[in-house]
Amino acid sequence: MHALILVDLQYDFMPGGSLAVPEGDQVVSIANQLMADFDLVVATQDWHPPDHLSFASQHPDREIGEQIELGGLEQILWPDHCVQGTRGAEFHADLNQTSIDKVFPKGTDRLIDSYSGFYDNGHQKSTGLGEYLQEQQVKSVTVLGLATDFCVKWTALDAVKLGFQTRLIQTGCRGVDLSPGDVGRACQEMQQAGVKIIE
Ligand code: VGL
Ligand code: ZN
Image (cartoon, rainbow, N blue to C red):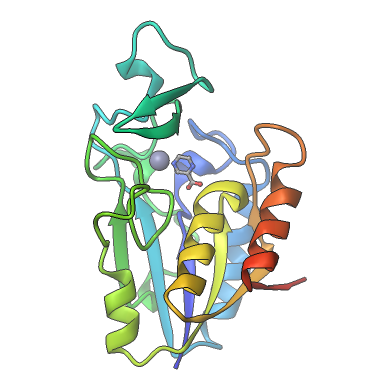
């Protein structure tokens, strides 16, 4: 069984969104085209409470982009984004949601962020995605979505760790590139970990 994992194809990561990824909307049609080639399609959804501690707005003396320590982990402070129940947290309307078998929300615990679609950043709690894929006898996964240098990267790295043969569709991903070169370095890191990058 081969699964397609769609990472965070939500309005806040699209141009015009609060954490916009340049050209983020361009990967939606690629996601739609690929769905038919897979036995199973799953999607992750960044799904934060309004007072999530990854939001700079929760730290009055801090600014967006600053790094703090949160629960013993390094945390970049983001603009408010993907707040549960808001339009920014919705999947792009063009995404063919009827072909998605199951959606996995993440980042729901105020106290810890979750870049990976499998676990929180402390690797303490599972979202259920890994267990679901194992139950469905999935052996290999293909990852695409937003953003290459955050949620896509950590999702792909965890997929490898869990023993899935893991591929990344590069044309189906876009990155934040907070520091220029981040996307390139993320791809290198994934490749070194055993992710097969498909162009
Ligand atoms: C993401 C930053 C914060 C992502 C989510 O989807 O890559 N990045 N939350
Ligand atoms: Zn987030």
